[in-house]
Image (cartoon, rainbow, N blue to C red):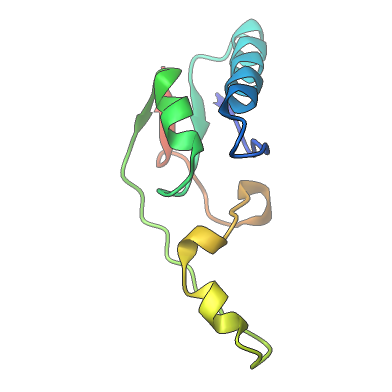
Length: 103
């Protein structure tokens, strides 16, 4: 099983994201993995890139709770999930068998 944990790149350069994903997939295939999983938020620009590479979407339930520590208006920023960046490595959310899977 191969896991693509984080793919960091500029949204204005989808060709870079596609190239990085291609290299990761080739590396994992050469390592004899039989499937590859990843997790992306719904609003991520990477969703179309992953789907173009053969990944399929699977339903997942991920409940998050956010608590601002300052009352400086930053809670407005926190209310929109599009302002968040998720990292699987920083989470205790287990993505198997949920998430996005490629065969």
